[in-house]
Image 1 (cartoon, each protein chain N blue to C red):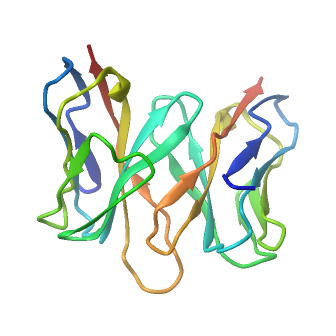
Image 2 (image 1 turned 45 degrees about the horizontal axis):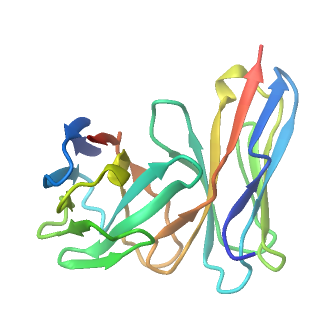
Length: 111
Length: 115
């Protein structure tokens, strides 16, 4: 994998459903993996910054895992709510903090 | 007000004109970044800066110039605007603490249209 790739590109779920998306990245020269939440007409907001293989982070109903050896991260949302509707971006960062973003997963939670 | 601001928020210009987008942050963050948002490409890094007077190219630097004479400001200049530079531009900043990498804080964006 040469670039940061996210799947699926878009996702529609019903309120109350749990969901997850995938971020794949080059496993060589790994430094850090970021997840951002981006609501329409707003700016991206950081969810997690992860560096260690096997790391798990949680913020409310949202959690993320990291596998640096195989180059993937999962983002989970438990009991999706309409306010969770947003584009979820993952990005890798280098030692100079510059981010390389994936194209994002657009989540729509239907009431 | 504290935070990161961008100006103008909206700009319409013509091909060939020089345009400068301003970014100002009040946190004294060492790192600052410029991204552009394009359909099918997501956010792509144009330039970044690790500190005042230190700048470096990102993924898509052609046609852009940056400077950072003060820690809090990071202007982006389009020397001769082209239609392909029509985009939404986001500025971001990040603390320059040693150790674990930190998140970036994004400004509200500038929507630029080049006619």
